[in-house]
Length: 56
Image (spheres, rainbow, N blue to C red):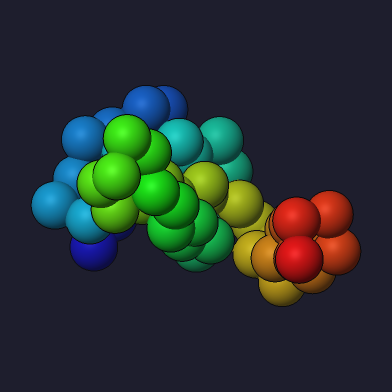
């Protein structure tokens, strides 16, 4: 699916897309509920590595 640029509400969670056609999906727990957010980027592998390095 292609949602375009900007902030979008999707069936898989919020999508913040600034560039590219791929996204990194981040799952987290807030107030005891499982949630997810997607960040659109032209370089998803680099973003994923940076997030894993910082948070894992």
